[in-house]
Image (cartoon, rainbow, N blue to C red; front, top):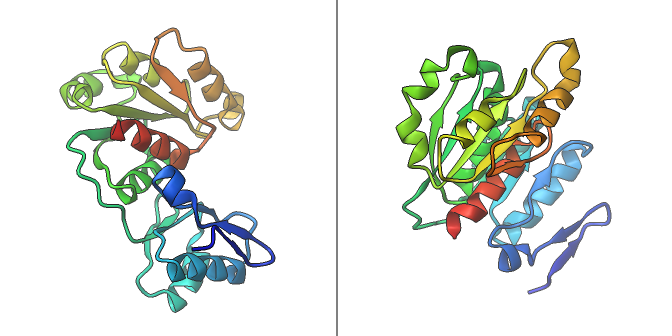
Amino acid sequence: MKSIANLGFAKLDLDRFRRKGFPEVVLSIGKTNQQLLKIAKEFIKHKQVLLITKLERKKYSYLKRFLPQLKYNPLGKIAFLGKIKNKTKSYVCVVTAGTADIPIAEEAVVTLEVMGNRVKKIYDVGIAGVQRLIENIEIIRKAQVVIVVAGMDAVLASLISGLVTSPVIAVPTSIGYGANFSGLSSLLTMLNSCSPGVGVVNIDNGFGAGYLASLINRC
């Protein structure tokens, strides 16, 4: 089997599943409908699981006309076709500080599920009402990995990390008022965490958090 499919405008890494345990993922931003369709068809042709991130609904509607089995999560703006089978008994817990953080969390959730992971979701438990977190802490503690998605002051990741033994993957979101600087303040808060065991991905990168958590959950 060839390792690269050269489409002219894109060179698809067909060997990534063998190397990494999951195929190359398609970022939809900057790609035309026609380019996305050609890429999707090529991966399907080679029997690869298809995952397309940051996909707007209009682009999904176009793809759906030609790929009727393509699934879509409108909150997470992520589409997929096929899933990896995994026998891992442990689960990943995805936690959000607020309701507005859910779209990024859903991107992580779909990524995890397509990669074959069990997922438990706990949404809207930010520290402004910390009792909401405490009510769910035992579910979080039993997770193999915890993903914490937060904007605004973004301190939820540090708080959770101090209460669990598992690694915490922190996802800063662009949710917040002016001084949030489109997620930059949240990113800096998470990077400056005083709680050990926190790793940070880029702003609004639910996919990256889900992928990393899946790798950890396999170990």
